[in-house]
Image (tube, rainbow, N blue to C red; front, side, top):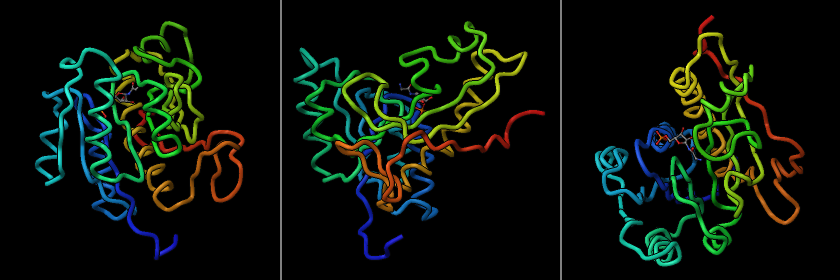
Length: 224
Ligand code: GAR
């Protein structure tokens, strides 16, 4: 890691609980991420994660999508709220709004998302139940660069978990979330160290093209 690189200003967008945001804030505090969470912004005034961020002394903002006539008007104010912090990285952490291509292009190459499935399988909602309904024996989490296609951007890294015989959507969600809290800070750390880029040629990691998602294996929380 270059010691001369300035810490990256990170703006995190959340819609609810904010546990992924919290895992990133904790990793910054533990100096595992060479960045600084400059702001946590939510589209939901009641988002639980806002309270945690305020408690950590992090700037928070709310851009309530219900107060706008359309996505473009909402995103115009969201952009102002984001750009105020001059972010080098935008982290979507359970931000449950569909984004317009114009918004995505503004932050292309510096906006990440986490999604609870092994993309390209199961973009969208209810991923855990869909895995069970399909009878899959493997599930997991993906971190990807955001492109205009919903949950469709190039995947940087994934972590797999086995689907167990007695799993429900809730037990699966819990085990996937544990892996999310490890994978997302790790990928954000790579980005902030300058190890990860996304451009016309696709993803580059450590100066080499990334031809397939990096597979991480944590899983220490799985029952035997
Ligand atoms: C996480 O499971 C995240 O992967 C998912 O929302 C949850 C947010 O939890 N995101 C998506 O489904 C995006 N398509 P959190 O608010 O506790 O981080």
